[in-house]
Image (cartoon, rainbow, N blue to C red; front, side):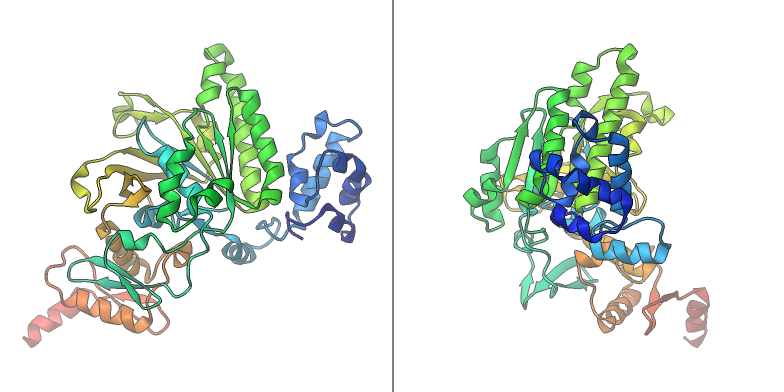
Length: 446
């Protein structure tokens, strides 16, 4: 059973707790509920005729029957297989940024982009809101690495992509719409027109697939999130954006005496978003503000720029991926069009290494400015792990074993490469290091 199934399908489940939901079917229908996933976004305490405790217990039991969530109480290998089947990725607009994120905006978890003003948080959110409408990645995409110049060439359907702009048409979306919760009045519909046209989408149809909530209070922000949870199956939504998370909480809960109350509300809101991502297996983006903390550079309380993400541990512990953004030097821009360069760094993610990459912001949204880092990441992953890590095969299909062997042989022979250990690839796909003994023996032969 899926979260997108009609509530009537619950009759097939022989579970007393789940049967309680069916006994309240008339009340739920009066609330406008039609789909199973919508049951998780009803505040049962405020609904007359429903026992909140029994209702929540029923939702816990129902979760075990949903096939679009990884599940619980199962062995780790089964969980791994289910996660691999369920996880999808949404294009950010930058292939390099996608790579350090493990493939893009990952479904099933909350991804946080934090940074100062003008660091690119909203631009990533807007670009992803369009990119989620693209079809999934084509399965015939292949990777060829030029080891001499460390450049990346992508081939798809026989056409070579040798320039940055040519990477844009490669779709990595979910073919679904988006919901955008705007707390800072930063959403500008006209900004989406060139982004949609860049991806070959009709901008009128693309904008129609994005539902916008403009909120000005914490109460409205919660209401928008609950309404989003109800709208996802009806509008076929694949991405929910909250831009930004803490703006209204910081404005309404002022002073240390209200800090505990504020954190409780923030915790509740982020948990609501996490439930949304998991139950519907969609992507969720939150943007977040930072505050100056100069002493943090020396005490560990902030990053190397003396910035600290607001929201405290409550937010940090409940997001799946935290990315810090900042302004970067424009010297790395290799695009013909004018762009402003930004830096993204993975600060925290249990399944990703702490890498950083540069991306650009242009009239057409988030773009790549230099593919060399991507090549370096791919080469490093092949040398270290014998392949691309995690779910990255969804972003880039690795080359054949013959291509890998040829590439590694070329890298071993290239004297210009420094500080990279050579490896050999076996038929099973594993890699082994060529130690110093081989070097010594080659010297003796010479």
